[in-house]
Length: 554
Image 1 (cartoon, rainbow, N blue to C red):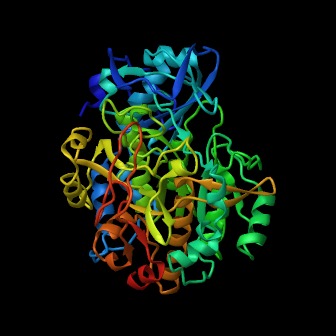
Image 2: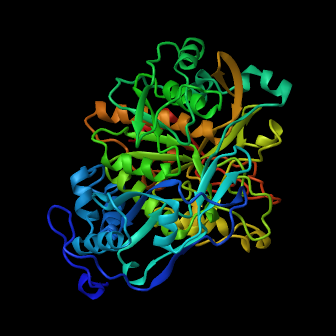
Image 3: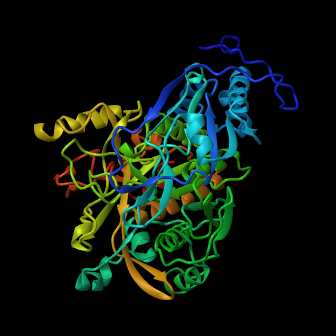
């Protein structure tokens, strides 16, 4: 490890004022996107006067030790199971080296960056794009999302002084581009009129044998990025029609975000209505995450979970993008932020996507099958999608309802190695796949999804009317609601929250409560994708759950 004296940095005073700026070393490339983002189009150089709120993730002292600790306390066969860490205990593992902090601040000071602040293992500052370009030897461009029109300044690569490489995890916003995995409307006509297949709260409770009424001890959260709103009046209408007695969700501002109250983009209304209904009795929150300008809301969300005094014990998010839209260092750091949240006893769930093996709407698999981030992070629970047709649950085919979608996301990460808790089952499944498909993914990497739930024909109230919605944007908040109920049940028995779920799901402890899904496949990007099979598979994960049996086993 590079020590502070070798880079000529001096110690800074207790007031945060440097005695003298350090002399920066030669610049060296730190991160680069492997491919240009396919769903984001460059519109040319970014405006140099536009202000960016930047963050630098400082290397954490013992992140490996925290990972090992989490795998112990989340293992139901360990005597330490459920002994989640306090915020202070997590910070004992993640505290940065004082010398590293001093060196980074000296670099910024020497570059003329002012008003620098520190929050534990993060350094923050605001600067115009022209300053960021000079600081990082980078060229920022305006990127516009092909569907939503969202516009962000990003760069495909950046550099920092070589002697700081061992002190920094990530600088953001730089290369990361993400978008919500937006639900879509059923356009099939007659199919949606078959009431027995509509995934109302009552249908979901019946289908998955939900047999418990909450005491209200737990809080469930859903997320808003990029100014996607959720309507309180629509929530009230939904409650009256489909789940009487629901308490309204609470708006929570995170990093300058706010709920604009407009649910017309579907995502916010779908998330709040079904998380609230399936966790009925538990209070629900809508985490409106900023910034809405050019910052990094996914990162801000993960930081909130690690710094809030009373965060939700279960949180569901329906955002992300194809893994190749991120550099590896960024994904590692954000994934570790979710790992820290799991260590606090928070269950973090992400939608697995609606494009099968095509990441987030990639059109061609010519260079291999795609992963989705953050769903492929080993420290979140990735939720896939199913459909119930003639009483049989199978991998959902979204295309039968809306041609803009294909099927539930799943496959193998292109970046993250398989974690110990499920490496054996994901590797075993890979051996059953045909030889041509095997050449398109890395069988040694993290397989996802972990679990699945019905994800088609969710009646949702939007602007006072009923819209039938599709997507793993539906299955994730719905099953999150169930886990919130399970946390309330455990609380009533004097037990801890379920926290990081994956080691429990793969441990064998709850096998009797898992319903295997063995029909269907998750096609996408001109590939048939993966086929459902007995046991874990890369189309439906471990399958769905029988809530009552799950409750009896925990």
